[in-house]
Image (cartoon, rainbow, N blue to C red; front, side, top):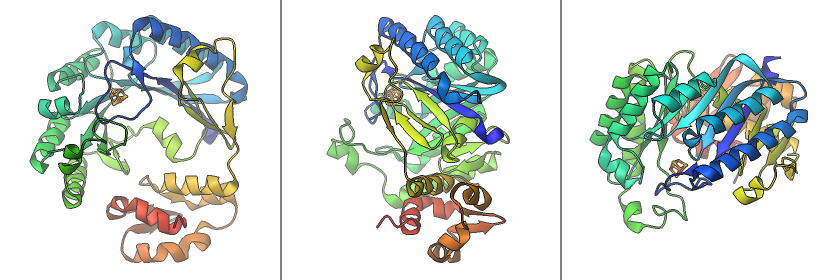
Length: 380
Ligand code: SF4
């Protein structure tokens, strides 16, 4: 059954330098530690075979951190462990998050030969001043070179990550980044607003907080950029994601549709057969597990109501919204009967759109999705 196809997530928590806004779990890169890590990952992957119950996997996602720092041999080791352990479909989407400046023709060619067929490149901005402010390791030129090399090495499915609502960012400067990205014509664009996370250099700097664009400007930035993407043939299929026809991220859709996936690496989560697993955010612990299994160390079985809440929150992120048939099969009962009264004020205001067998957020609804969800799901 198609909905039983698994997604596989591989976390590679090494970075050359910490970006000023980032609170993801990562450690400083060094090649020896990376090789030891690849071995530990391969061992963990092999030990996870029983969780698949013979199911096929149709997506693999290397995220980070900076997985594009993997050497060719380390990447090959991990990919062969995946192929030996899981029945990966011939048309599987295999994505590598790629930081500009960390790859060259040879490494891109090796990733491509190993089966990677989609790159998600961390562009973030077309302004060198903004990239410097974010403490990114690359310039706009590094980004463009990475992109062009990837095209030359045969990658025909490329996504760009772009950030907006940066400190001191004007609408004009963002518009320049957006039009620059569109000229390069990637297949997919992820478009995220900067969030100030406590414990990061940005999060503790009042001057940064004071220069984040105000709420009205952020709404204008989001709306105008989304319209630019759509004018150029990108369909919005999730609050922060836009794709050309058929180029949606199949892997990320698994998260938003509450489908099963297995994640490997410190901090990685799994959701399979209604159970959640996660690894501790501790690379030393992970490196000590070559002969041990820690996938089940922290696990819990969410209640039906927790699963339902998670399902509704995730589904409303997408332009497909809640599929009421699917919801009924999973949780029993009638979605519309259960939630209609609470959704009605938002339907009347045009924030929720009722379709044939679905309820979804309009673009205006997506702008206030947290508020709408908190009202519908009784978070108050
Ligand atoms: S490269 Fe990515 S994961 Fe690493 S510090 Fe920067 S934003 Fe965080």
